Amino acid sequence: MTIKTLNRLLMASCAATLALALPATAKDLIYSSFLSSEHLLTKQLAVPFADELREKTDGEIDFEISTGGALAGARETLKAVEDGTVDAGYIIDIYTPSALPQTALLADLSLLIDNALVATAAMNETVLLDCADCRDSFRTHNVEPFGFVSTSVYALQCTKPVASLADLKGLKVRASSAWAPLIEELGGTPVNIPTSELFEGLQRGALDCSVGPVSHLPSYSLYEVVTDINEMPIGAYAGAMPLNIRTQVWEEMTDAHKAVMLDLIPKYVAAGIFAYNQTDQQAIDESQTKGINWHPAADDIVSVYDAYKEKVVAAAIAKGEADPGINDPAAFINAYVANLEKWTAIVAETGDDQAAYVEALRTEIYSKLK
Image (cartoon, rainbow, N blue to C red; front, side, top):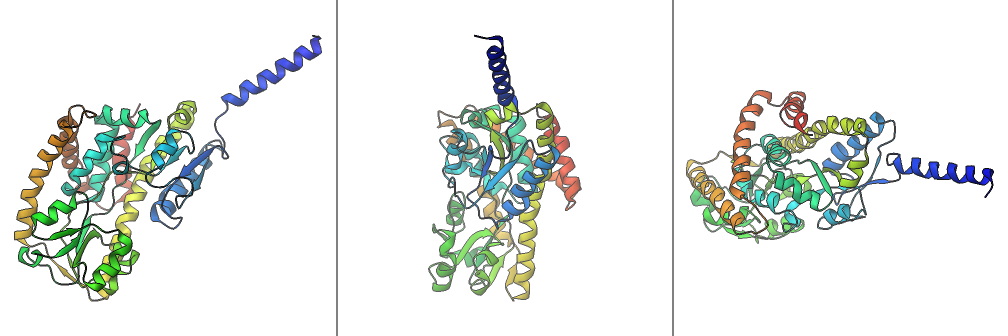
């Protein structure tokens, strides 16, 4: 072998080593969501997060956003991140409860939520700081969890007045998951149908009411069929995680790039939940212009609901203790309940100030991540 040939081989080897050491580029990083390109979490969270991350890393960290389930459906996203089909995605824990048993169990506590800002912060603090087993479950599937965003708070939307407990008796109510047994407790009959069938169900009388965010009114054209809404907040789902990254990608990022990403995450967690709340408020305002009646939370409904919530925590702990995949469920469930209380006080101070909420997330949670 000549010296010239040897030099060429050495140069090629060095170039290959350098290429492996470089951070992933735009063509390498893919974010998958089953949501549409028009969904608020796409337009106000995923896309602007990717844009700002690209800008602040000089294009070295860049996600291509794939929407509409083109690469992975709602139930397949966790597996797609795990096997490297995509590098991040919109993950819903209740679709894969055996893989993510701890956070999926927290969905049983959805009825404890009466403020989505509080729930979003409490979920992130519980998983990211207080529950090592929660994080380990994600990492077992090659996922680094970074940001959960709650839905907006649910309300009872009906085709007739529901102003008291007596009004609920015998009503057919679209409700699933944690809400189905609540409806039974309130005297109604839960009906589990997809949201795509809401309009027809309410129009034809197969349903009397639906439990869901008020933004369902414009999303499913329910202004035409809903006549009455009870303003009592009846929970929200806080286990959706739009901000995460495949573990190998995270480990290969430079410390500087990790710092940029962690600095941006609280901003976009807040962007997601404020977008949900703003969409709900717009729907509320429009409902009032369309003559939909709003009824205050009746004392008898609140009394039954509050008593039922006491059972929910004990039932969740018992369910967790029966699951061999969950260690000490009481510990992280009680941590979540405590964090709901903690963030209720914080949000009472930050109010609707989005910047103040971002700073609270950063101070109380993200500055403590290692």
